[in-house]
Length: 416
Image (cartoon, rainbow, N blue to C red):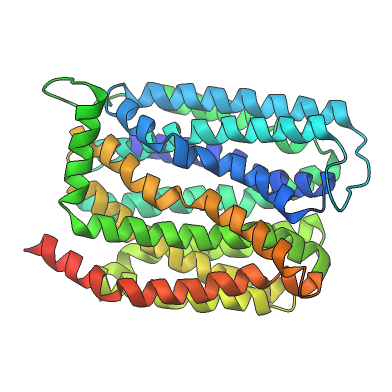
């Protein structure tokens, strides 16, 4: 097994655990409360570290051995999932979820804490992993390597993981968290066996402010990276707006079980896998500018179609279209970023970029809960549950119009 294959397999194992948890976090929260805002706080705790810890993660990534950082963060996530499983086991059997408040406060706060720890470790782990990839493949193969990496991650995170998570929830609730530790353990063994130099080569080490300033200066000097980061940020905001609404919409409006809901999410994974595998070919045929513009143009209608979908199949197809566009965009944008940024700055610039791109995710989750809660005051609950899809769709169309020409100008600038 080559170093790249080991790296991709390890990422697949950790993403299998994350995929199991994708269903578990929101679903178990919905068993404790029917309040959309309180349900949203659990994934908010999972995503908030991307806003709080992105900059420290970049500084650390450029200072330490990136492989060891990955191993440490995977061990921390395994411990957090074991703690969540234990808290859930102790709290069983669960009471009836109230419309306001929570039925098991200790369990609810334990889930929030575990989600925050898992999310915090993920910030450091993912930043280190993305900066390691250019050390495993030559620059000309970055699109293909990123496509292979994301297809493996999606296969486990969004296709196998949610379906397995839904099955484990139906079998015994704590299993949805408990078995994740084994997946992290296998991933750690694979990463530990990687040979090579995974510490950035740097002339000197200065204070954290000076080092962070270097990263900011580089990002400010490349307008294309700023446009891509902000566009991805709004895309993530809209994508997370529908995340909480999707759970409650599937349960209350469409009457889906946990198993069928997991399969619906798998439809999105199929679209994402196709986007990851075909992204290199699409970009080679259309060019990066047309590719990214086309993916943006389809994203808004995809969000709207999810809100209008009358059943599991149509919802899954709309989700697949949205994920396809998202991952074709990622193949081009991340490969461009990895190619442009020097290795010694990659951790810091990458963290700044991801602060803009991923830091909006918790805002999207909070907005989702607020839109539903405020909407219930003027429209029936069933209608309120689809309002986040409409907000995301219209917002995505507006963002597309605003950045359409900026993307072309940015690529033209780096070509010159």
